[in-house]
Image 1 (cartoon, rainbow, N blue to C red):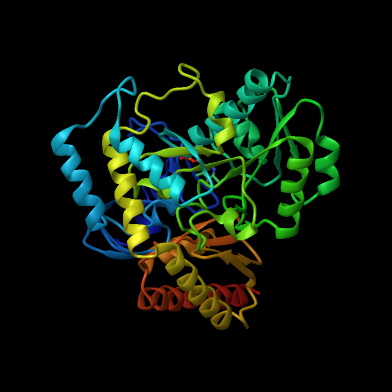
Image 2: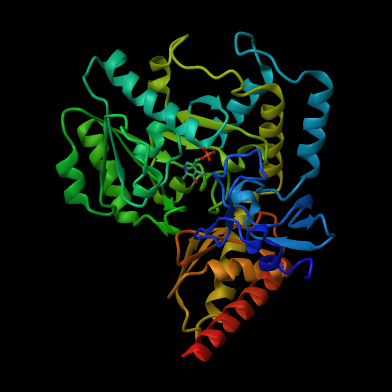
Length: 425
Ligand SMILES: *Cc1c(COP(=O)(O)O)cnc(C)c1O
């Protein structure tokens, strides 16, 4: 059997329990693995990365249009970040947050310089950043304002993480299945339904939390007029506005944070994925008036903002500033969507192309899992966002030539898929 014939090399093909998820990845029952089978994994073993390219253990080279899910925003192993992290590894790996951590101070300062935030809390993931945002909102009302507000309103099709609080905040039932009872204090209302939102607001409402683009939910940008109304409603009713920028932040959409393009300033927003170029880090960022809600001892993380990851955050932010990465992402995002729209305009399988900057969704008239595995066979890596949407997340330094190559491959894959379906008819 061919080494890179992905379907054939799946261990599951030889008879073990197998389930296929929306991405087309297969989960193999954990007989031979010491790992929980909680991920569906593609039978690809990637061993090396540089820029937009990844190599597997067979020496095959892949064009990476998923970036570890919006993480390696500067490409794989970006030079300046690598050097700073290596230098930090020579000095000090870890020190408790009981001490001063100058790298953490500097990373926070830089984040406040490129955004509307004034104060930052560092943690290790997107879910933890959202968890911190929820805790900050509750504590602000209960301890600073002395009001009994705790409820967080979120929206259908949203995604906010996998901890108990953040999966409860997530507006998709599949992430809650089997995890009852869920923590109290969350309400989900239909996205873009202002009346339902108003009806859900009560004297206990602490915050409204939303994404500027529902990325996991299918790459659906929020409607600008709705976002303005939500922001106005929050001001009017004294409710905190939390924007989850875990996927959309760090230049991905063409500005440092996507909410800038909506002309709003959230009270709290969260950042993770691309923040440290691939090292695990998250940040919860807030306005000055929220500072006093997190007094000493109220919230903590052992690893949060440790010297190595904050060295990476600093180098990532400095590189992004020096190279105007958000602007570049906007420009390349336009190039990518224009090319896709032109090349796919007569393709019957494609329903809509949408996105902001370098997060692009191609909504199709049917499941796209097979296209993802076909892409892998043709050495192009991308993911889905729900069953019918192809999601493209190239790194923000991707070249025109790489975009051209990815578009050509993708268009050919979709055409072949359509032709195969025609034949079945
Ligand atoms: C990925 C993601 C999260 C969760 O981040 P983790 O680092 O996996 O915990 C939360 N919100 C959004 C919008 C995300 O895309």
